[in-house]
Length: 543
Ligand code: G1P
Ligand code: ZN
Image (cartoon, rainbow, N blue to C red):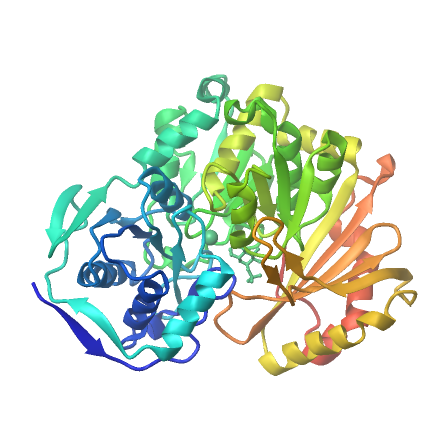
């Protein structure tokens, strides 16, 4: 088997967004696109010679082909070993765990997360580093640099590796280990949670529905929930990964997980419902008739995590992304924990987790996780909730009500305007940014602005700085609106408007979020002129 150089040219825009490189699948399949980016990654990390990597993805269309290319290129670049999930399957948190467990030099995670899959949908590739976490900004900048100047990539002429069979084989001088994608991850979960207590809950008749949304967590959920913990067969819905997620949009929120929401609000609703996304790092938690916002889930976990064996010593600190609600801050303040506010994207939690400054973090976009891996982890959040329910004996609805009673409620909603003209979106943001200094003191929809800024972050561990991370406008009385452009979309721009208001009056803790937030929503539109500029009457998605 011969390795050889293939001449190539830089391809425009191979720049990672919030989470790796995401593009339409056909772009990824175009000549040299994937190869250029893989070689750029290998160059940026100082070559592959003698290195070991993990490779796997969420099973979406082109996952299998892309893995064969990555294997050949890793071998051609002199890698010593690659560990691959059987059939190319690895959830993002499982990939993160395998990198750490096997002390590899990093890993390639193939996914466009919650974006739809298929030849006419989206694909993505992300490089994770030896700590198991997404490449830091410095590394993604170096990858972009390499991709912008690339002149050739290295390839091996070889047959496909059979990924259906567990076992070792050689690709040139490189060992390929095909492993069960679930075993090691399931073993890790068992060290963190009280499996006896959770099994006891199921034995006592507790019922659950888990919607894997035809995506990667199906095999993990079948194994953990049904086989290991004894939940009834049929607990896991849509549990077979499909290359196009059966035509669905594998994003676990009340809009896209409407099948599960229907079950949980129906007449014979089970006690507990949950869902996860395309690559298994996001989660949705819902009780009987009680949807839990990701921000509230993070806060509630912060308040109760010590009931789980892996966290019985208490938390070292917590972190949330800036647009995430301040609910977790209130728990941290009450418990005397450090609380960090980071830019959007899991990569910013890595340094805090590595330094032991925090062991719980989360984002409003349905991401929650801890220091057990360096990614957010959907099933981890589900098991944590099950452990809390088993330990407290309370329902989801009661846990939430008690939480709000103790800490107050941060009413929260995110409004997304999708596929907005990129020019319109960037002008809207630029105009907002230009008037920030004038906003304090003015009132919009009856709310007085107290502070307004553009979020920037200096990492407390490595002191790197990141600017332009979204516009924050704070109002009198603890309300806030944040404007930000998405960094994961593949068409036009997505404007995200994050709306929040703190309520501590015990008689006003059970309103509909949009009613409770009516003034904040009106103020956001007045300040940014969203309707006038985009011509949209309403957001495309509210979560
Ligand atoms: C979105 C979420 C962000 C998350 C990312 C990857 O990024 O908002 O919290 O980390 O997906 O799952 P965005 O599209 O907003 O840049
Ligand atoms: Zn995801």
